[in-house]
Length: 153
Image (tube, rainbow, N blue to C red; front, top):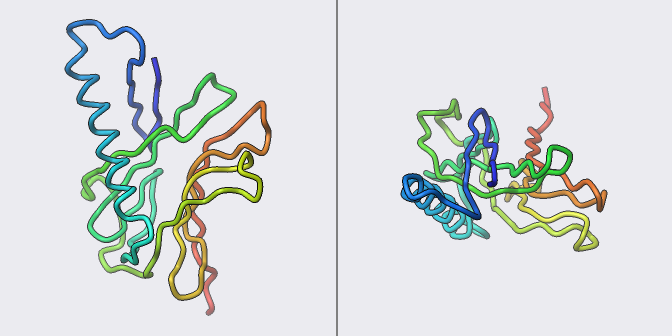
């Protein structure tokens, strides 16, 4: 059984045995995670309006994507998947404050990190990074790191 943590919610997907009464719910969850992955893939490389990040979710264009953590065994964690969510569940800005582009990120050595970065198209500032950090081979860790720009005031 895999447990995914997304913000304040936990999602459970049964990988091995699925009881007959649960098979429909598990199928729905798997389909939702696949739909989230497909939506994320569809925006890679596009320039989109950015409305912010909150609770392991971010809004670009008209999509809100929640990034799920697979906690593995309590010491290790990995990127678990994605869900497309309703923006009413979050407090994003109503007006976009940046134009961004989502890119796949691989560390300098492919076993160091794998995930995605949300770059500002004007100055390449990294607003958001999410994925799995493999710097410690024995203890990989889930990453969801939002970095606002420093104020120039």
